[in-house]
Image (cartoon, rainbow, N blue to C red; front, side):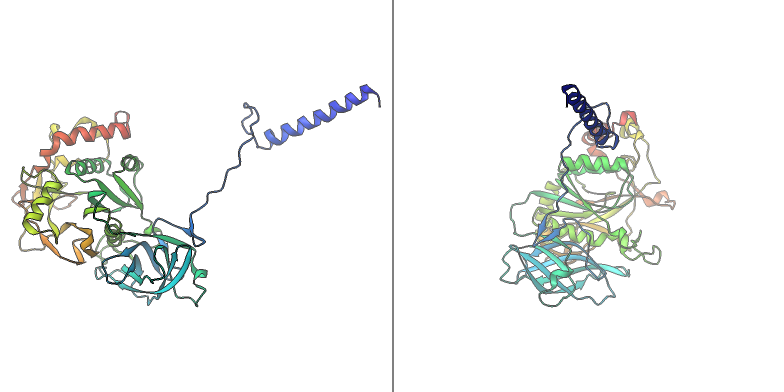
Amino acid sequence: MSIKKQAKTICIISAIFVFFFWYYYYITGRNTDYKKPFIIYPKIKKTKFPTACGIRVENNPMLKVDNLKTYLLGSYIEHRLEVKTLKTIAIVLRSEKAEYQCFLCCNGTNISVPATYSIHSDHFGFNYGTADITCQVPETCTTPMHVAITSPSPLGKASQNVKVIQPVRNQQTRDNFTYDFTVCISVMYDYTNVLELVQTMEMFKILGIQRVAIYKTNCDPNVQKVLDYYVMQKFVEVIPWTISSHLKVSRGWKNWESPGELHYFGQIPALNDCVYRYMYQSRYVALQDLDEIILPVPKGLENWTELLHELERKYGRNVGFEFENNFFPLIIKETNPAYSPDLWKKVMGVNILQYVKKLRIDPTTFNNFKVIVNPRSVYSASVHGLLQSKGGTIRVDSNIAHMYHFRNMTINVPENFLLQDTRLRDYAGRLIPAISNVLTEVLDVQTI
């Protein structure tokens, strides 16, 4: 073959190669940005889930127990019993006669032991309720790092039912705590009240609270921005709360008025999980909602540190503290420009500084309350108070502190049923600029 023919053949082959190279990477979509030169993209590695004993680890609730109508929240070492015990907070169908076993992952090997359970008495008549599933930790399992709750299986075949395993928390007791005060919020569901959320968080900070745990199902996008901001500050922990994707949750506490399978969005199991989650992280834990603030009354007590010193002096350290509930109806608003900056009017939500009229307390009827407790004294909790604890609870004198509860009420309240209470406004000098700074920084409120 002549040199000219050889050169022509090489040119044709090269042209064919270039064409297929161009077609493969540009036309078929390997490189869809035609204006950029060809780039060899690195292979994307598939996300690998952490495993224990060869089983995928899941850190968040809600885990379903194989063929049972049981949902697991968190698992914790119970150090306060004579025998080392593992307790798992769960939601169970009360009518189901379930049997359980604990599948323990101990130093890379697994052990199965029988488990027992008890259902909490506060379920308000709903089909599902909170339960404690417990098992004794065998001496051969010195460090049970992970556990799965399963229905009983033939010996040696327990792992067949185990698809997901969860970490065991509270491995060690502690006397030095990361936080002095933690607030447990249960639960955030369809939440849109951006302004009140910021007001509450900043008021918590002023009172000396260092951590807020929020069990969240869903919320408004701007609420999520606020949550992300406080999470980045390590002030808030958001625990995903997905029970509504498994059960029909009630929107109220009376099953004949608000039908569902589980009381009020699963509030009670969330509170119990929070108590155990922060048992060895926080000196005190408060169980309350986002529209509630526990305030000291005398001007000499300005924060929770000063308040708890006074309560311990007056009542002792081995009790939980109940705080009288005071309703501030949202239908009775006092408009005062000094407590309502124009900036805030651009944000969705309630301005709690505009509400200074509260309902008189009727001493002849039951008055709800919320508690601040030493979590290491608590075995089980409910919405209002404790079901089982070491020292019980005591009602705090309302002249020392009580709870401010900003609530929608559809009834008209006669003036003689109302009292003026402006204590919250004593904090306005610090609270207002703090709130405005957050709204400007997080939501760019100037352009909303």
